[in-house]
Image 1 (cartoon, rainbow, N blue to C red):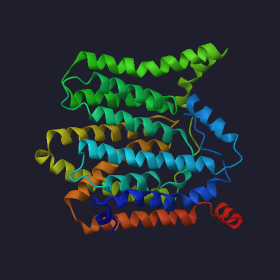
Image 2: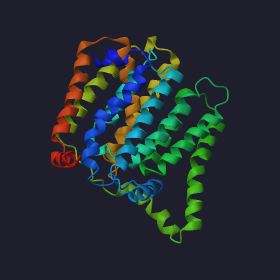
Image 3: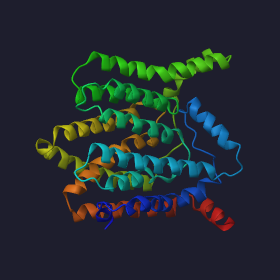
Image 4: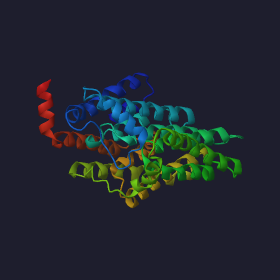
Amino acid sequence: MFTRLFKSNQPFILFFLPILGLLLWIKPYLVNSIETISLSSPNNMMFYNQIEQLISYSNFHGLQIIIAYLLILLQTYIVIGINQKYQVTYNLNYAVGFFFLLFASSFISLNKLNPIIFSNLFFLLAIYRVLGSHDKLNALSNFFDASFFLSVSVLFYFNMIFFIFVIWASLIILRPFIWREWLVTLIGFITPIFLFFSYIYISNDNFIDVFVNIPNKLFIENTLLEINLSYLILFGIMAILIISASKFIFSSFSKTKIRKRNYYKLFFVIFLLTVFIYILSPSVSIEIFLVSVAPFSFLLANYINYNNSRWFELFIILYIGAIIFEYFTYNNESFLLNLSNW
């Protein structure tokens, strides 16, 4: 039922997605709006800290939830736009938006303002520019823009710095070797960081302390988010869906157009890099997997466009059931208190 609905090309789906998002975000709003103003992380960079400070001036504590929800909704439409522009999946429908919104909104403890939401917005813009480089004679502007957007994402969430390897991997997968394109990725990546530190140098007497302390963010243990039973269930079902869709993609590689084949190779690079960062960096928690939600969404949307599998539909229903279970088990005291205040 769910997959058949979003496999259609009817424009009303675009208006249904915000309603689905509201259903997924209503309890985070009722719970988190009376708790912490946002999700602080060892990876917070100064761009995010400034936004957090501005929002803290507001007496409306639900504002941070509303901003986070709107950012996720915007990213949902960006993912749909990427698919419409570059035809990443077999059919140009809205299934990819459904999966992105569903997966990005699944974990209630992350459904509040946090730096990875801002970073992922700019990372998606970087991916948009990278995918547009395929088969172009001159892709210098694509890779400058992609590196520039990635650098801006680093200024919100420091561990995004490792995703420069995704840009370089795209040069290997999508492009012939052109040394100027490699050079322009460095120029694009350095530009926002240079401007940022120039501003810090001019406006801050403690420039050296700021500069020296930033690399330490990689080694500060992140203990803010704990993996509970509902999260394990969600990850388990998600893993089954992704493994099944991946198996299908690999088995049909020989029949897939080279362009799409290269896109999915790049998506697997993003996923593998995300896993390595999660394992190796103590400052990272489950929030880093938001970066992989878009590749997962393309993978699953492509799978359901080729298949009408009932068991796949069953696992989607189980995943939604696990989200409902999470709703009933996550911080019910705060939920009932805030609901009574309404």
